[in-house]
Each structure stands twice: as C-alpha cells, then as structure tokens.
Length: 330
Image (cartoon, rainbow, N blue to C red; front, side, top):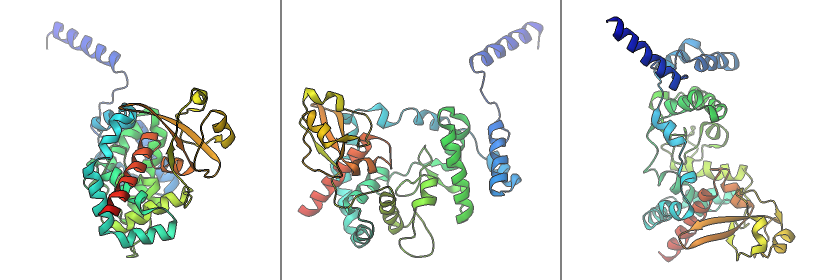
C-alpha cells in the first residue's frame, strides 16, 4: 500500500469511527463487554457454567432486523383506523370460531377455573399468533441478546428477559438454538415472554410438562391463568363507547389505567352505563370516520398487562366480541 493510499485509508477509518463511535466490530457476542459482564452475573447469581454461556454467545450475533422492528411497532406507527383491520377481519374471526369449536371443552374448563371468558382467551391467541399461523420466526437467543446488549433504551428490561430465558432453557432442558419467536423475544401460541412463561405458564393438559409451542391446552390454560393472576374481574365489563362532550377533554388520557371516579366522569358529561369497580379511564382512538371515545374499565386495563397498548387491548376486545357473535350465529 502506498503512502497516499495509507493516508486515505486512515482518514476513512477516522471518519467511520467519528460517525459510528460505538459500533462493535466483533462477529458474535462472546467478547462484547456487556455480554461478558452478563455472563459473570449469571455465574454468580445462578451458578451457571461460564464456558457454556460463552459458547452460547459465541454462536449468537447481532440481529439488525430486530433493532429495526423494535423501534417501529404497529402500536406506535398506526392509528386505530390502520390497526384494527389487521386483527379484526373476517379471516381472523372465522379462524377464531374454528379454534373455539375445536377446543371448546378446554376453553370451558379454563373459563370455569379462572373466570376469564373463553372469547377473551381465543382473541388473545388470535391476535398474538393467528392461532399458530404467525409465530415470529426470529431466533429467541439472538433477539434477546441484541436487545439486551445493543438497545440501550430498554437494555435493563431485555437483560432481565435474557436471564429468564436462559433459566427457562436450563429448567426445561430446551435447545436454545432451536427456539424462535417474535422480535421482542416472545414465543409459543400465546407469545409469552420468558418471565411470563416461568411465572404464569401452566401444565393445563396435565402431561407433566409445560409446552406453549405444541400444547393448545397448555396455551389456553396459561392465558387464562395470566389474566387471573393480573386481576381479571369475572363478570365485569371491559370497555364501552362514550358520547363525548367538550367538558370531558381533561379526562382523556393515553393511559389505560382507570383513575377517574364515577363523579369525575359525570362532571365531564360522561355517563358509564356499567359501574364496574367505580374507576374509569377515557380513551380517544382515531378511526376512519374520526375520533372515537371509549370508557375503559378495570378489565380493559388487565388486557393491557399482556401488551401495554390501548390499540392492542381494543383489538382483543373487539375480536372477542366478533368471534362470540359469529359462533352464536353458526
């Protein structure tokens, strides 16, 4: 290489590091500083084998597609007008009716034991994976490692999920390299993240193991248990449409958490037809025909514990209603 070429090379290299000062050049995560610290923490906290963990991360690399997808989820990009048709449509409704008919005994058992309507359980699985048709297709270890070590904004959360994932793999003697799921590290028919799998998944078919990939019974029971454990109130309402008044402007919130009293709602000209547990939230969604206003009850908030999005909870609720209506007609 000539002197001039060397000068050009080092100038280009300097510019590159000025533009991308934190770009990691290693091909895998085994030597990533934060991964090395994570390995040390796992050894100390759980007695895991350092060499085995190093080998796992040596076979795990950064996933650029995951980083792209995590920054533009549908719940953030779309309004209700664009979000609703993805999940509340004839194909998914009909698939939900079919799923319900095929698994009616299990759904009835789950509803009776946990007090969660079969329609809600069916809708959750429908929104999450289209009844097993769409499961994500991303390597779980790659997605979680990428988000844990190369996504600073939520690295704390995803490091915790990576920890839970490795514990889940160890406890259930799973092959980490074969497990696939969403870009956010959720997997199985109901798309449980690792911490939810370890805390809320159950052996509903009583075969001695919990399998959210292949056991529809376990998936149904686990969804029901998840909602039960998050405070689902049997027989209480979820959400109802509201007739908006200008006086109610100060009640509108992006949060699904019910914080307004019945008297506060009435002072804003909003009159819930269902009293529920006495606390409400007022939501505004942008539909094709314009703004819609909805009164969220406690159970609406519980649905958002599955996915912290008003659009998601509304899609689950409306899909559940459509599936139930079509099933009755059929």
